[in-house]
Length: 339
View (cartoon, rainbow, N blue to C red):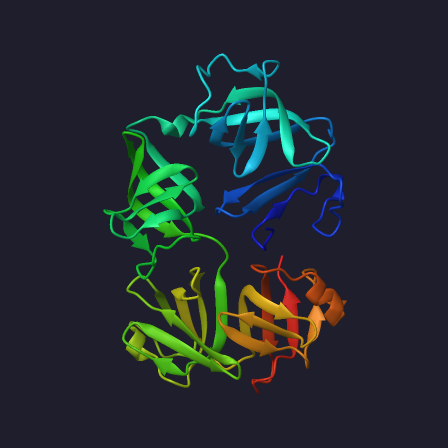
């Protein structure tokens, strides 16, 4: 999965649009249990050697998996002297060739890839996608590491830990477990510029033709004003104020607000990840709201005008886009791909 936070090395003039079937790429990212969320992509000029790094899973005689990808090995495979025996949970780098079907890596060499931060007592920071979250114990897996978040401060304070969330955990290792003192949400920021429709003690809401959007607000949410009416608390805002809100969206679609700024009325904007889309009806779903784009013009991530077909052809679930309603009449008049 490639999204707007994925960086692409421009060696060989590589862009996402220029990636072609048969290209050999190096991809770094986070495994969310079903796919790799790419953080970086590079083009490789050596198509004779394939490499994969990760934790050994489902070890059997002459085979195992890394992130669900099949690896085969035999007596001819060179195994690093630092590896006493292959075992589930061991972090390794495997080099070799793909089989003809392209579904199995035939290992020529297996090397140990022990990370320095895996030593007990070390202060560490690990960023990744939460999996196997246990709400009772407040533990989860992050990049193959067990994290105990029972004593951690959450940033933003409204953060709700769930599987699929991208976070950075900070703390120290004890018996191979990261005892976190801080969990910070990471990833793309969601932005909403619109008129406040509802205000609660710890929430703020916006209303659109296709539905409503709400966000959690906490003591860590930065509150600002550029209209000459300073704000120090959420109640200083009023229904009908025009604000720009920034925050992070959790996997169930709730925004944790990091900043809210009151502004003079301007164009309405929504920047968020695509949850669903339909070229036939020219609709997209962002933050649980169904937006009609039939009246919209379209731009790519270089601000170049494109057709509706080209726009929808580049959409994928999770890709960030920006919608604009320049005259605030409820009709989206521009949709733009975000890089």
